[in-house]
Image (cartoon, rainbow, N blue to C red):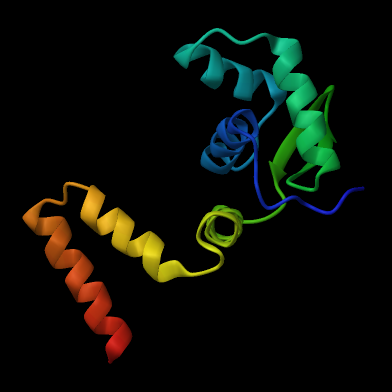
Length: 125
């Protein structure tokens, strides 16, 4: 089995979001959720689930006649690794320029601004 890659492709991430939401899911479950948003072939979902298993992102067990997939690692851990990889690749490992970019380019509501300031103050305490 390959070591998990921290960065998921957009398709892999869409599948993982479903698996994280459901906690345990069959290919049919994932296909139904994805297909509700946009058409996707069942075989494509099956192939992607196999790839996610090979990469170590999901584990499967046989239940009756179907395989049930569950996340191998929690969502926050995978997302954290993806963010770290992005910061390393785009901002040469420096978080500050990314944070400044997000704050300057994002329209924050007064409520969001206040929450951000509280979070910064909690770090300083």
